[in-house]
Amino acid sequence: MTDQDGPPETGEGEASGAARAPDDLFLRIVAGELPATIVHSDELVVAFRDVAPQAPVHVLVVPRERYETVAELAAAAPATLARLVEVAQRVADAECGGQFRLVFNSGPAVGQSVMHVHGHVLGGRGFTWPPG
Ligand code: DGP
Image (cartoon, rainbow, N blue to C red; front, side, top):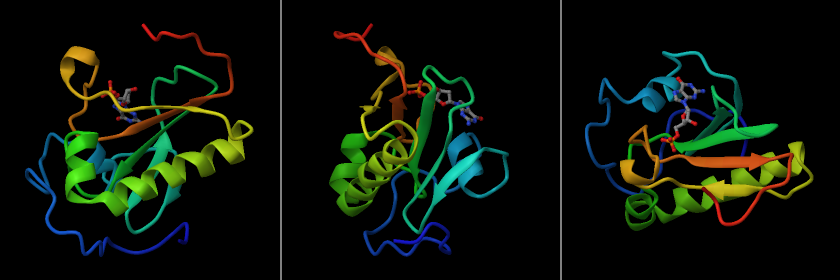
């Protein structure tokens, strides 16, 4: 894996939904159409800082292709999900000693506001359990 590769060539089939859905904020960030502080980019995933950080480290890792939920991503493109988790660990290794909380909100009822699957990598402070 390199940090700056070209366009996606996943070989894992088509992403669900409209590949260029105009309301998909994260597709627009992946395409470079919206600004973001990108901390990692490869042929499968892009990681960038959350615009409203909830912890000293708060990075979103998203697939380049559009899937709505983590379960959908796991079923359709498991290698991309594995890469997403690998990148989450790499971000945490670089920024908060390797320990982190990885959150996938799946559905509006539990807080998903952007319907393009994203892992929240949270770290750099203590966390309580259970989450709110
Ligand atoms: P969720 O609620 O799980 O769907 O998380 C969406 C996250 O995305 C939320 O923490 C805020 C972040 N976010 C929303 N819009 C933008 C944006 O335009 N840029 C960046 N960097 N983050 C965004």
